[in-house]
Image (cartoon, rainbow, N blue to C red):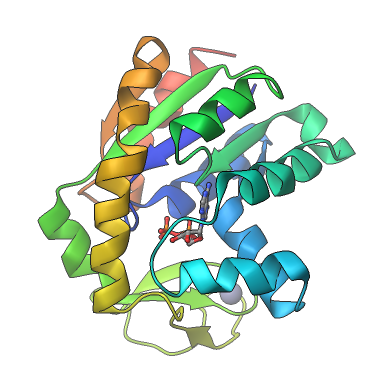
Length: 206
Ligand code: ADP
Ligand code: ZN
């Protein structure tokens, strides 16, 4: 089973994806994480991607599609993938249709007011990738693995606003593109409350 997670930045895609991975044994592919890995390792893709990410813009489709194709071709992805942050444009969705069969598309729907509220409080674990928010978690180390938490470079007000604008213009059209396969879930409540209908939906599909 291959699943796409659609949703604005801070809608909770990463958190939801991790829950689905645990219960359904799929492999999570986050293009944002892949770019950050490339940046950390100083690759050509990373150097190029950073110039876009720092401005809150999308990395060009050709670069993103090539990186995703390579990842999805790896052996572990045979058991099924959950795509978190890809596709983000119609061109990416068209390219994806030639690479993989998609079984379900889940849209996380969160009001922009709530998104702005979450934006500046997000913290990520340097060890295991767990995601926290300062509004609900006030420690500086991870509850699961003890590693320090950090705030992503692109989680600042200026970048967040341009990311929301980019989402509205370039990614939201995918909601129509996938209309026939779409399962919409309200994502403004707790991670567990958000996951419940998704879990039921996916159980009905395997
Ligand atoms: P978020 O969903 O919180 O915006 P991500 O970690 O998914 O964060 O992405 C961070 C940045 O990486 C994006 O703002 C964008 O610049 C780049 N990026 C990630 N996925 C894609 C994609 N599919 N196409 C183009 N750029 C992408
Ligand atoms: Zn951790």
